[in-house]
Image (cartoon, rainbow, N blue to C red):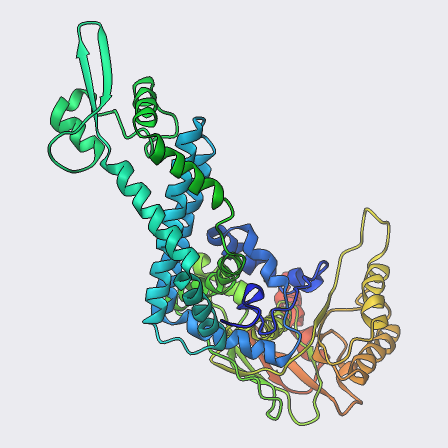
Length: 504
């Protein structure tokens, strides 16, 4: 038996207690909420909380990544999707059981529920055993499941459940209608098959609506209730045993299996999304997590934007990047609407998804481990608080800097746009110096080309323009320039000398 099996988790190897992040600004800043909400449409609201349980070490990331590698494979994925569909059927049984008003009928519905539960896990064990699992997490779970299903208590419950249901399905009634009097008695009729089939065969189609009083609709007819009462009188030992079985096994669900049911949806939700996006032509890859290599990616794109493009048909441009030796921060400049914010978001999404153990939206990537992600995106002036834009930005920025979190990944987008250029440069340089001093890496999107100068750990990136001065949405290394930005704006609004001359 696995040590401390009751606390086993497929999200972390130590089965530690989870500490979900409560206030997570980066979910909205990076448009991750759009991605998660998309997955919730199929997998329900409960799965959302698991995206707030972030790994605390590279070992946890590797553990999740190995589990995800197993789960995204065709055999395991199909097995687990089928398993979750079986669980959905059990949930439906539970919901219907609550509508039952006759106590003995409710006990039977409970036995049906337990039987379906046993069958679901027995099928899961068989199919996982044949799937060739490789991850520590999934192999450990399968070992725990085998121990549970092989235990005397489980085997006895499963056998008892099957026996009860077999006896119920074999029960037959003789309903006699003579003039204005109807009698119901327990009897034997030739032939086998379902209760409904027997009714049609013996009595004709006109009363086919009569159903087994135990396992049909929760609301039964008067005749069906009479059948139930007769059966209980004729076979008291059977029904006493049925009641006892139901009462003794009220808490039949195993804690470790319930935890697995909840946690596996975390992996399935993203695996399903990935499959849908891959079928639409988007690429994913399993990232490396090698701290000895440069952090880089090829063909990186914004997943939230790609999700929207599936319905809109708009092209999503992918980009490459690489942090060179000693480089900690990208300072990204370029024309408005040139793809700067989209690129910054894609970087943050890359770090998040790699940290959570998933494949990433890129052709290839090597992503370092970061204990946290911090973001700051520009805001509008607040009507509610009366604060100006600059004050709102500083209010959000202050706790980020006061926390002094080391080695995090930081995404800053268009800070200090309402401040005078001289003041914005001083504040921007101090922000960069602060985070670099804490060992952080990240990207700073700005209109201030001066921020890319004067620090060996800062490298300049530019959103490029085509020959026609139209944004290409490509991001490349290059010296920041005001000219390109100004020229793009002039062309966009038809304000060149020749255009003005023509209009005037």
